[in-house]
Length: 365
Ligand SMILES: Nc1nc2c(ncn2[C@@H]2O[C@H](COP(=O)(O)OP(=O)(O)OP(=O)(O)O)[C@@H](O)[C@H]2O)c(=O)[nH]1
Ligand SMILES: [Mg+2]
Image 1: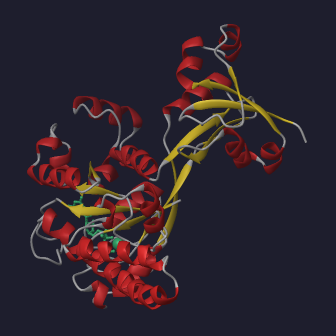
Image 2 (image 1 turned 90 degrees about the vertical axis):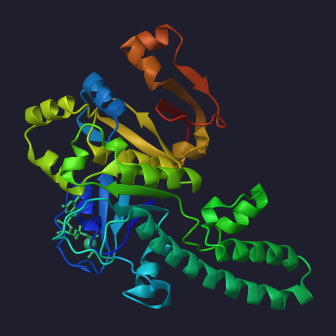
Image 3 (image 1 turned 90 degrees about the horizontal axis):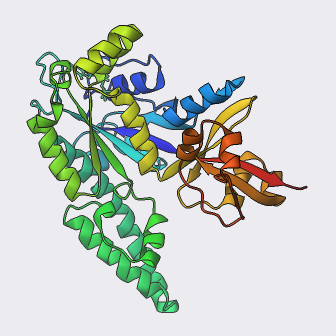
């Protein structure tokens, strides 16, 4: 599961990537500083796993992770080959979701390819390029389908849907916003479309605005939030520079500083968790003296399939899953206590895994 970091050139994509992935790739003040994609594996912060670590004191602690890819900036006309054009677009074709970094900081010495700070304009530029690129793909499919229709009456249903998508895109809207029935959704999800990917807008704030105590009152933020609500996406406030500053502080100073500002956690952690969520992922945990570990599954996964994440033998020889929710375990303070109170439930292979379940699989091979 991979998240692509997109946006105009020089808006802070690589700075955010470095902060997320703990890397030091070049993030300089000029457009197209990044050309080749950079890949980083990022651990998903999870207070539940931290709690379980304290409870079991295991030898090994293994959090869930997601991958981020930092790519080149996109400019007007990219879908027609401007800037790094189609190369850029091919770099994000394979990702599962997009983190769209939007410049909200005013600082004259940081080059803006559009000249001014205007988040809504910037978002529109990028999204239109994705839409244009999708239109090309749809057009090609339509032509193929038109040829098929003569020999295959079933093809006309697909053609109808493709034309609907074409009209939708022509009106400047993202495919992710269209209402589809279940069957059409499956068809559309199999097309390699960019504007159908889930999106988080990361509003990249100046340090001053980020730490001023009420960043949510910021006008730029309100505008993006308004757009996000209408376009099936979400927005998070972040400050690439501010996060750098936080990570440079020692832990005690940071705690004090953050509590003064009513910051319950650093923005990066929220960003990672939100990315995990829009990918449709949840975690279940396994515990023991050797290892406390978070496992990633798609929301809706059944127990037997989840067992296969650990080992194919466990899936094949699945007998049952012994499951307790994190909250119940925490309330009982120990697994023994939870068992005595009957809170560890025995579930069959079709049990749907819930986020935060702690599971012991019983199997036989
Ligand atoms: N003042 C301020 N400067 C920032 C912020 N975020 C990034 N910058 C600066 O903006 C410049 C560009 O940052 P990058 O992270 O390289 O931007 P990018 O989007 O990866 O740029 P390209 O790879 O060229 O598309 C650098 O000089 C950063 O230090 C911010 O929140 N505030
Ligand atoms: Mg970059």
